[in-house]
Length: 154
Image (cartoon, rainbow, N blue to C red; front, side):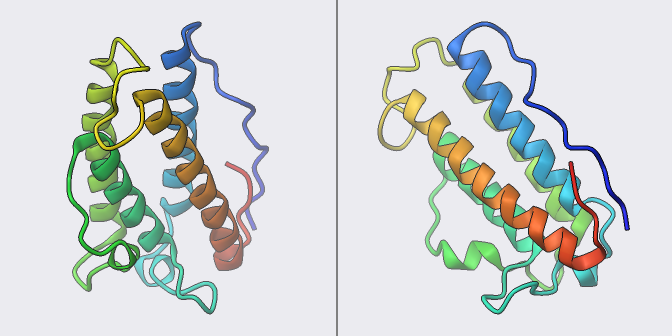
């Protein structure tokens, strides 16, 4: 059983966008850390009766970022929680990291957080929503990982 000391809140720059993007990146890294090193069969195995699994959470968060920050359409949100048979831990994490890089480029281009976001609400609202969504699923990933192999912490 692996026990790590939890990391404290992230260091960020002084500006509002720096703080919001810093916390979002901190949570993204926590999600990735929970899925890394888990064998594919265990990462895709449902950990709870609803069928939630680590790979599904990461795949879902990839689509969340694509939708809210990059303007992609998602036809079926429930389907985003289910890895395809050909998906691997490596491929899902690579897609998430690639999406994060694209999303961070988009965020970096924002000069006014009060301006309309890519979907609805302001850019500020979009960042707050992504923090909330990612934090929620990072908590799910914490529990799933602990159920898989007892690993806790970030």
